[in-house]
Each structure stands twice: as structure tokens, then as C-alpha cells.
Length: 114
Ligand SMILES: [Zn+2]
Ligand SMILES: [Zn+2]
View 1 (cartoon, helix red, strand yellow):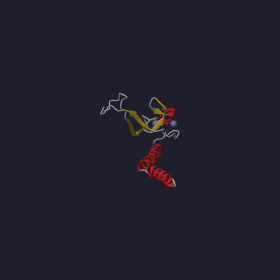
View 2 (cartoon, rainbow, N blue to C red):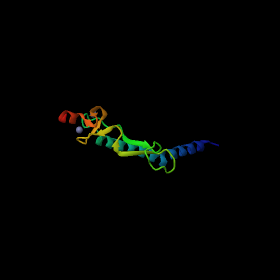
View 3 (cartoon, protein in one colour):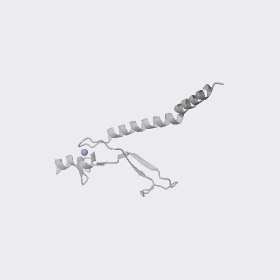
View 4 (cartoon, helix red, strand yellow):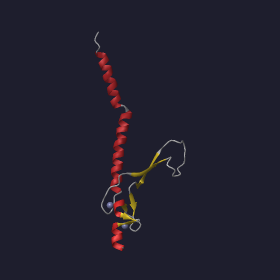
């Protein structure tokens, strides 16, 4: 008796695994996350040197920032409106990297008004 059917069955399982919705969803989610980050970085850049933000501001639920402790799980909150590594200049209100910000004032403003 041929055992070809066993190989066929394995192939079917393999194909099913590849086409499974979970797989497709996670790939899609990854792709969407990439696009989201790219859009984010296009929006949030240092206005002095053009440095892109590394990513959005995020913190975990148990870091003591006063978020509601719903289930005691360590959830990460991501705020896509705030870059993690850029600060707004107090004068011109533009996003500035730490290299070009001193005491809340960007290099451009410091040179202009200082
Ligand atoms: Zn800069
Ligand atoms: Zn400024």
C-alpha cells in the first residue's frame, strides 16, 4: 500500500498553516505598524536638523503615572501624539531633538532672540 497519502496530508496541513488567518493578520498588523511608524516619523522631526523621532511616547500601566489599574496586567500605552525623544520649543512650538534644545528653547530661537 502506498504511503503517498501521508505526504499529501502533511502538505495539506502545511498549506493550511500558511494560509491561516492568524498568519495573515499578524503579517498585516506588522505591515500596518510599519506604515504607522513611517507616517509618525514623517510628522515628528526635529525642525532644526530634521532628525526623525525614534517612535511614539509609551509607558506601561504599572509605572506609577496614575493610569487606572483595571486588571493589574502590564499593559503598554502608546501615545501617537507625542514623540518619545522630541520636545516642543517653548518659543516657536516646534518639535526639537535634545541636541538642539536647551532649557526648553531650541537653537534657532536661542540664536534669533538670545
Ligand atoms: Zn535636532
Ligand atoms: Zn524654537
